[in-house]
Length: 85
Image (cartoon, rainbow, N blue to C red):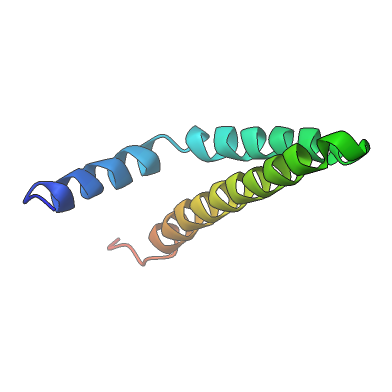
């Protein structure tokens, strides 16, 4: 890894935190992929494709939910900090 990797990871983390809609988009893509994969389970000829889409969709939904939870946790932590009045 290069010396810029930690800086790049920090910038990506900052961008994701500042653009919270990305978690919603990832979740929607995951849900759609999951749904299409579920439909492909109906036919015996498309079960493999359905399984692959099902797993990919599940992963996207998980990533979207975890990212959203992290952002909400950070926001909740900042809102609960005492302020100097």
